[in-house]
Image (cartoon, rainbow, N blue to C red; front, side):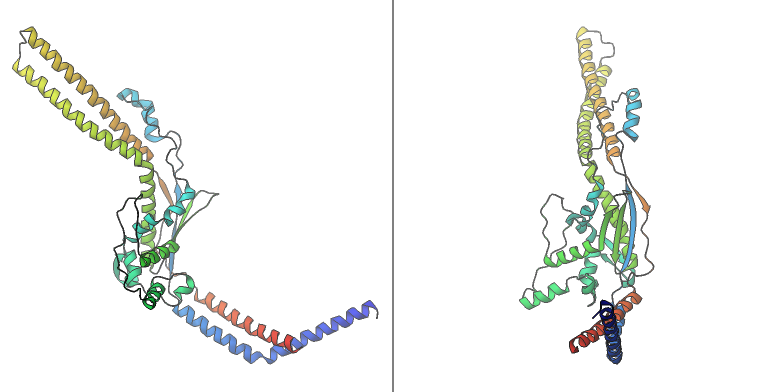
Length: 368
């Protein structure tokens, strides 16, 4: 058989197969309609019962600190006129947190515990409570919450009851602890923490260097408040990290200044009392006594003046080390929830249609 005739015959057979397949699918149109209808009904239920989640966000620009700026530069220029040296400030790039670590800071346990202990007003629930108490006591997730990933507490409690572990002693959520201390949380508390780690996220745009904060909550007002609180906590964490050493130096300098100030005032009082009681200074012994008291006063004054300069330098260093984060896009209260009922309906309708047609194709292939 010539090649042309063989190809033409094969083409006709394929065309006949496609026509037969189309006829078979058409004969199954009522089945396809029923299956698609079932999926449409499921899609409607999911769209109606899906819990509302409101998403908001903010865009931040962390500072890029120069080697010498602000107070340090002014101190270098004019410190000599005030008797202060700026050479010991050392206000360079030390202690700067890389922006790539911001997502890890937000996901860290200390940050999440601080956030969960903050009180927030939930307008749709008409209650003001901490974020932790809201998810632990007020908010009840629906069945469809487990599909979206926001599972909070309920599965663990059910499993615990089945296993006889429902008598877990509830402890208050840890707060006000040092970052280097050992923290202990219960299983139910950890479930809420993991839930918040999904709801509050930070990402870095490496090209522009901006930080994008995203917050998702069941209440629009709460979403905005949690976003604002997260920004404040992030700034506080950065400030504490950057200024910790400078704050310690300042506190030590203030303590020394107070001790030296007392000695200086005592020397000043002794000199004044001696001069009041020895107005004429007729004897050499009295003059020698005055010189000794004057020397003690001068030494105390010089030490006091030197420490006062160190305190001012320490204050400038704290100010210099305090980071600045500019808010390019502030947090706003979301107007609509991020759950698209139309999209859910389209997805379920498409799945039902494709599944029923696929079943028809498989039946056709088996019969052949």
